[in-house]
Length: 337
Image (cartoon, rainbow, N blue to C red):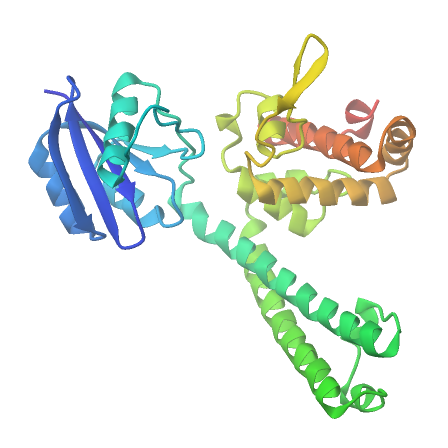
């Protein structure tokens, strides 16, 4: 008898429902998030064809444990799963049963299970991004305080060079000077940690063929190449450049019928880190590559600048797909003819 399991994963427990080929519930129970307890419960049910696990924030440990136990695991794309609209009541057990039901029918929306050996490096790069955003928060806080109390505009680069004597010379109250000193101290602490992370990430990234290939693309430096390589994972999972560009959020989500706009799709469906990387690369490419700059200016003359930048990002994403697929060096004349 073939069995199908659905797991509704939470922060401290998991709801398991196992169905047979007739959609009859063979087993259902809420268990603590414990590897041995969950694997033991599934083993006791009999041969299970596949196990569906929700792609929540904490799926790593459970998917790894199931794969180690030789189960065929499906990571559920929760944003694409739809419940029956006529339901009056739903809960954890009905959600888990619904996942198993969709999997049995072969219509379960699934996501990519990023290989565990690459997750740590990718997440370390995301941690660097979090710290960079924190550093920017400190700089903006200092700039706002100075503008609010002194009416002055101070660049971020200038603030980074400030010392204690520079703060003491400001025509501010002691509490305000203390606030700036605190921001500056946190900013420098974050700077130090960012450098430590960058050194560790680059040491491993130099061994990645994808990283070296992406460095040839206009507008893409070390950080952006790292982001694109690590967030993309296996390029073979994308059927074509259009699929990759869609995943990177650099395509229009507009829906049309008979030449008229009928709404928009989910513009946030995809990878936000890739979206940031390609838009950043587009800005740098427009600034430093003359051919891309001319292409952008022609596009911007016909539409909005933000749309033109997104168009450059789209072309860069398609070019990166071919580079990651074939290992070829970037050719600006082919991408921006």
